[in-house]
Image (tube, rainbow over all chains, first blue to last red; front, side, top):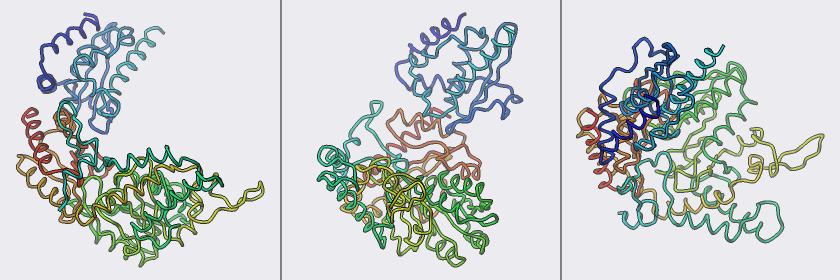
Length: 141
Length: 404
């Protein structure tokens, strides 16, 4: 599936929820359910420090795609990471570079992506794009 | 007794809803809300007397200058400074601290010592680190214990004839602990060191008496005490302010300028280069009048009731830990719930209309000491109520259920 298709799928899933509480409960479940990153990748090098919560992000090239894993010490942040990983991982670098994150607004989580939250998510998206740019440049050479 | 409903009616912002819920504003430690008289005074300034100060001979300039200087006098009275020129207008506490730390660059020599405490806000750590880097002076730190109190015997042990300045906050922003500054000032003076008190968190709750304290500098912000943002005061003893070089060069701070040599203006203008936040400075006086009309004794008594109520109600929550367990505390409760990240609690209770601060509160050394990523901080003002505290406790319980 393309990034856009996955994003639309996520929007559909979230449209079933009536209020913020159901949305949050779902994100908390997502945050709890999966180990997102191998312990060995939870290094300072992969750490994005926010004033509110920490995020670890690791990217790897597999064939012509990039696979991301990530984690956070806060469960809501971790749940949103799970959504972002679903949308951006296992995609081509050029597609990642051109993708937007507006679906996060549409599923009612916009505030978590505001810079003032300092929860590491904004930097995480930036770093996802940086990984994609770096892989893209490497492949062209 | 305070008529809280009458007081709340003075603050237009308090009647709004957030996320469909009535706003419960418990982030007063970050900034206070503003009463209508303060908002009106800001508007009135621009509508009626806006002009640059200390310069024009025209009537408006005179009116603005008079209003600005009247406000300086109000601050002087409020903190009981000996002279009006010991009261400098700044943009806030950070500005005041930097003014002093920069000035000390001309005083400190390599090997001299600066003492800060583990309870400081970053704004009372970083300027001193920068000063030490510039001068070769050494930064010494007063440690804290598990209750969040300064270990005073350790402070005593740090003092020596090398100590040139001691800089501590009056009240900790992260924990609400009130520090024994009178003792610290006396002891520091005994070895000939100057003392700066960061009063940012104190001035909303109490009326400092700088002469009684005998501190050399006392810095605070206007916006935490019902005044406008971008306003602040640095009190400095006359002898110290005369000793320190100017912080910024520019207009207003000069006596005479030639390309060969410039002579500086007298206090307080020596430290007030450029056009200041005139409206803000004037309106800070209005805010101080407003607080004094309510009365700091009454504010103190009522905020203590809020603190007791909050501590009691929050203690009902299973797995709660409150940081800063001391009798001498401002109306601040900093806490965590076992196994739950403060960000998660803060985000959920925000949805329920409760505004608290989460994170490290610009005091990372304290969080490192307790080995935590941050806390949830509820800081209460005299316009808050026990009912609001109950709403917060319910919200935290609901968040805990969702997150466990």
